[in-house]
Amino acid sequence: MNFRSLAYSFAILLAFMVTAAPGAERWEQIPEPKAMPAAVKSGTAPVNGIEMYYAIYGEGPPVLLIHGGLGYADIWGGQVAELSKDHTVIVAESRGHGRSTRNADPYSYDLMSSDYVALLDYLKIDKTALVGWSDGGIIGIDIAMNHPEKLTKVFAQAANTKVDGVKPDVMQNKTFAGYIDHAGEVYKKISPTPDQYDAFVEQISNMWASQPNWSDDDLKGIKTPIAIVLGDHDEAITREHTDYMAKTIPGAKLIILKDASHFAMVQDPDGYNKAVRDFIDN
Image 1 (cartoon, rainbow, N blue to C red):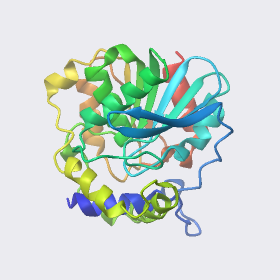
Image 2: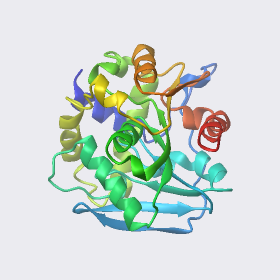
Image 3: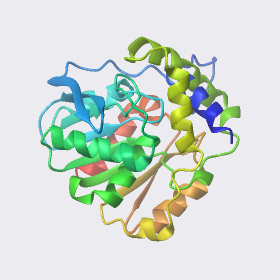
């Protein structure tokens, strides 16, 4: 796979939103997410040499939502509106994404995980549930490996633990390719470095070329309760790899989201929220 092309396309896709052709199936559409409610608090946190954007909503047991690669926090509008009714919901943007800055440090999932752990420390949140999508799910798994004391549960959707878990023909999928087109435009509108998109994509693509690449023993060492989640029409992650993850991580729960793809949180927010609540609240 050409990971630079994948990154560029992924960015486009994230601009949200593919206009569906008449008669398109739900999993072929990427609706615009619900608007984010008013935040209790928002700002940037100094972590690991960057300024990391975050926002907090609601009150109750904490849950951290982590977006996918080239994405940004507002993808979670439908989840924030629901979960903030009885949870403290934290959203943030990974280094170089959205409103967060980046530096010259090479990207790695370990580094991005340490960013989120540092953010939790900055916000004085000792322990949280985590919902991660795509790269966010991978970051959640990484935190479960290296900082399990920070987590209660992990809901990892559309994640992979080896690079061969990604479908080689993902960029031939119209929905995925459509999602990516828009992300670059969103980056230009909200990033503190709007003219550096190509450099950002190149930097993170170097990570995607070889990461993640965790062994069976790495996965078997996970003690945090974890849900491995996939839409039944995911364009990017293979079902075989998802099944492998669920079988290898001790006690992992396999959840398959019906009539949904890589973008299940906006395609079926009610179903997605129910799956999240059924896991993190029980």
